[in-house]
Length: 313
Ligand code: SF4
Ligand code: F3S
Image (cartoon, rainbow, N blue to C red; front, top):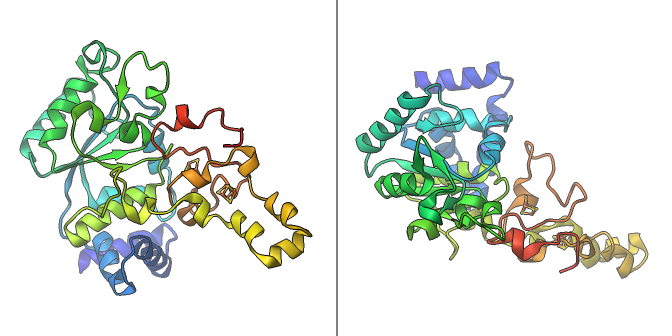
């Protein structure tokens, strides 16, 4: 109880009221497809966590944008909330240790929590030339992935690079970059996006802590609660050419359809993600709302498959 009280006091000091926090939990519960009776339980996962699963967070070929996006999410301090409900044992970007000390920490944590830790991976794995295109501390990404990932209870790929190969695997791909799943021949839970929305990782973790299992996945390993629908099917711009009121407002069906970004190359009809609902920057906006077509950043092979971006599909 003390812990819970301390949690709400800490939020209060940061200007987040209990009401705001409960609103966030309600939205998260709905995003997870759970009934509203789960809201207090979701709040409890943050406020009074019963367990803090150990996490090893690996970085391979990527821009660290997934970590950056995640750590910069301000309201309601998703980064802190997650760092409090998880026990992050190794994360190159945010850990204080460096060099041998950091490497020691990685190996000790992987042995100590063998079969129990969650491995979060950002970045693709170089596979050609014995993985020679990418190394950390003298070991190739491939060696590290082969060593650490099989010891984890679950491997969560954060971002399109680790999930599907992303930009590093775009043509001509001299290093033979692949997704973690293809490089190791294992099943992974994938949270693609360039960058992915932090709420989709939070939802996955909360699902795990609340129900003791990972969320239901589609055939590409993506949580259905976040990637179950096409962008186009949730897009408010679509309403403009399908709604009589808007057609009247715009004067004709053609004019209303002009509000849609399809002719500017929008890949919304082929892209599965919850951007229109979850939005970015603390729920402020998302690419199509800001006037830019969706480039399909969360789909497999998005770079090769969807370029040139501004041409109609
Ligand atoms: Fe679909 Fe894109 Fe048009 Fe929205 S802007 S309705 S996602 S094609
Ligand atoms: Fe990516 Fe399209 Fe969403 S470009 S961020 S999946 S709107």
